[in-house]
Amino acid sequence: MSNKKPNFIVFLTDDQGYGDLSCMGATDFKTPSLDKLASEGVRFTDWYTNCPVCSPARAALLTGRYPGNTGIRGILPGHRKAAGLPESTPTLPKILKSEGYNTAMVGKWHLGLEKKSRPNNHGFDDWFGFLAGNVDYYSHIYYYGANTKDSIMPQVNPTHDLWENENEVWMDGDYFTEIITEKCIEYLRKMTSDGKPFFLYVPFNAPHYPMHAPKKYMDRFSHLPWDRQVMAAMLSAMDDSVGNIMDELKRLGEDENTLTFFTSDNGPSRETRNWLDSTLDPYYGGTAGKFKGHKGSLFEGGIREPGIMHWPNKIQTGVVSSEPCLSMDIAPTILDAAGVNLEDHYLDGKSLIKLANGKDSNSERVIFWEYLDQTAVRKGKWKLVLKGKLIDAYGPVPEVHLANLEEDISESTNLADKETEITKELTKLAQDWRNEIEEKWISEYGAPSEAQRLNTQMGLK
Image (spheres, rainbow, N blue to C red):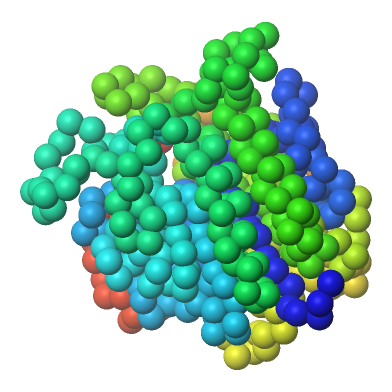
């Protein structure tokens, strides 16, 4: 192996619950490729996304910042002139490209559809996938674009959303997860052909609705109820894809020089918009395991995610870490590994390389979240949620909720009235941080209305 800089791969799933990997506790189906990745690296029990919905979570991952410091705080619309991640926001691929890296993305973007918001304008040499929030897995039409007319760009199919490097492509009938595998292998071969290091970002659509899986995967889980069966099938296809990509990495001789991350953007969906015919059918196939909450919620089930870090001979192996970490830590970690001076960049996250080798701790780290009216903070064992949201099945939600995560991981008991001092301390921390975010947002991006800035249709009503 040459002494070139390390390569990087980031796998991201969509709407995957904490309990939907066998290495994270699933008992009714197996994910052997990801189990192997975890056993050879570090598996994080307290890994968090930065937001419980798609676009802000992805912005945080690709910038190393809190969503409010990226220009993206809500779910972006899917029409072809939808604005997205500002060009002025530095991204991980853009920085790596300036450091001599080949860069590629395969999968779901959801950070803007207008020309200047697309992946090629944020540092990716090559990209393949779709730009909006979700597509049919076989026809690759934009899920909410069905049966509508696009007056903005009437010269193209208004519902179709599959692209390669700015060119619309049609692969009708091909299962999207399997296309991801093929394109990743193609791009890996291309990026390694000139000897330069590479960054490959692989944001899967699975297991986001619509719930589609090939028969060969459904047949693996015929013993499960339908919603769980299709969830297991979609995740099994994703797991096979990860395995095939990692096998190709080894065939190319790059496996020992590649740092790999795996996580998800937010917790399992409890939305009721699962079918193209507009049928309001709640979906419950995914699980957050022992945690309360779901996509769109700042309780643990909406933000605590699977987290795996893998780097042969560079970090510990077979380690399970309970240190709190976030998706915004991925960019600083990768930049650190690439030899980039982190002080030259505005980052809210931190490098995890020392932590992954047992030489650092996040035990008292203070971390924050915000989405719509909700704000949350974790400090050590304490977690405070202000104006939390849950689907009606959970019952009334208090305005202020305090939990001791060491003793009550499911946040079932509200200690706000009992632990008044810690409640007061964390409330101030959360409110001060949120105020800073709001002030910065207004100064940098203006002050649009909530309706303009955020898509609030999260199925939480």
